Length: 384
Ligand SMILES: Nc1ncnc2c1ncn2[C@@H]1O[C@H](COP(=O)(O)OP(=O)(O)OP(=O)(O)O)[C@@H](O)[C@H]1O
Ligand SMILES: [Mg+2]
Image (cartoon, rainbow, N blue to C red; front, side, top):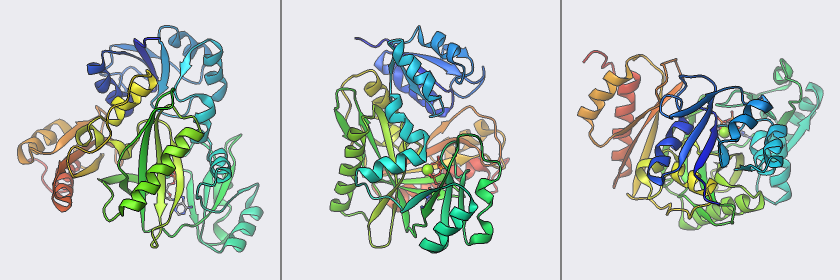
């Protein structure tokens, strides 16, 4: 079947950047958005405003789409299954997506596949959490099984006295996952694009820096990673994508210890913040390959166009007028590729990103940081 219209559920910046990638492919995007003015609704022509947790809204939206994909992983499983029952292609499908929706399901499945993960246990109450911590040694990590993002729903617990916290305000159907604390030296991420036919391509491994639980920087390829290590990580991600039958982009977040070994943190099944560098730095961006995979088109090459790419997120800061700040950046740093998401500035909110590509790791990093700092008003430059 020729896919002419891809329906995207969720109107955030990922959908906005998917829309940009759809233009040269000639496929149409239809958007089910949370509101008329969200990031992607500002640029997509065909927008339905509606609630993605309402089955009838989603089914009516899907009628004019050939396939459905997502900006986020929050569409309830029964609705995804209802779409399949109505003959609609859903990428990733519900059996794959559940591993990005529920961290307990993800841990159990990856462990069964022999993928390195932190030691974990599902804990019913704070006594069980204390028992886990006493057994493993403190600190331990506690996480909500569902609904966490940007570090919300993740606690580092230093001792039994803190172990009641994760159980406060627990929503129905959400479980608490206790994990061994991984004393990592850095975090890595690797992205795979996979078609329904099984064709797969993997992007170079990226180093990702989280600050207060939010991704703030990425460096690609991850510095100081041996060819053997990179190859092992890439093969691990390709295997996970195939075992879970992921269609579209799979992002595998990893933690690396001082001895070089890695464990998987979590999975996402959509374009991912750690792949934004690929818009300017790879032969085919993650957004284009996601759409190609969803439409079952041949995938494009994922290798880097330049030896080094640095991406720095623009978080809402001291400057409200991002367009004025951006004009200054374009003048001061012509090599900075600025992406603004059309979102209003709220402190700490992701409102854009900057990528710089080139030959020298320190140079691209410094330029991207300077540009992002200017957009965030962190360089005392306001009003210049
Ligand atoms: N077992 C662990 N040991 C040490 N640190 C951990 C562990 N699990 C998670 N972390 C840290 O907490 C961060 C957030 O965890 P996780 O990715 O599970 O949460 P999230 O809120 O779903 O994140 P995202 O913003 O990626 O959706 C990780 O990036 C890592 O820095
Ligand atoms: Mg994460």
